[in-house]
Image 1 (cartoon, rainbow, N blue to C red):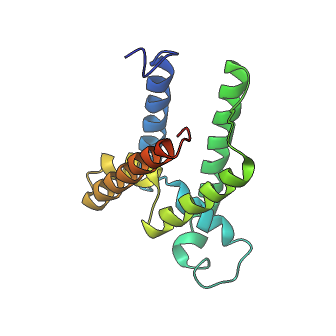
Image 2 (cartoon, helix red, strand yellow; image 1 turned 135 degrees about the vertical axis):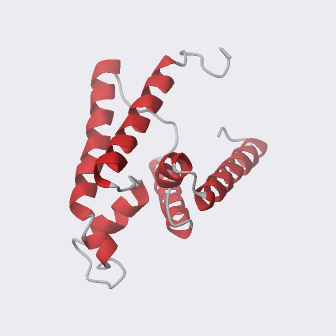
Length: 154
């Protein structure tokens, strides 16, 4: 267990509880599902007049989704301030950018992301979300093993 969590598991448990409480509060008070991929599309509805981005589901939800995104950023800033330091990676920014584009494409292809399907969809016992999460995990396992086999560090 120590090998999997060299810095302890408490902060993971606390983070999971906070995320779970946050999405439960959002759903209980508004009936809305908090997913990050729809946030991206609804934000584009401010600047793009393309019919896809101007669909009713994006235009009507963009205000609360911006507040949702601000909460994610604020949470990150608070953790960084209290824990010291900040996120660090040895991955070059062009690879991070490519990874972000691929992940964004996959989220749109799956009609949702890990937060929408994995947290909200599984909690509401949605079969499509279970299938999406199983696909996400299988892809992640395969990618990590391919990267490791090629001499990289996943």
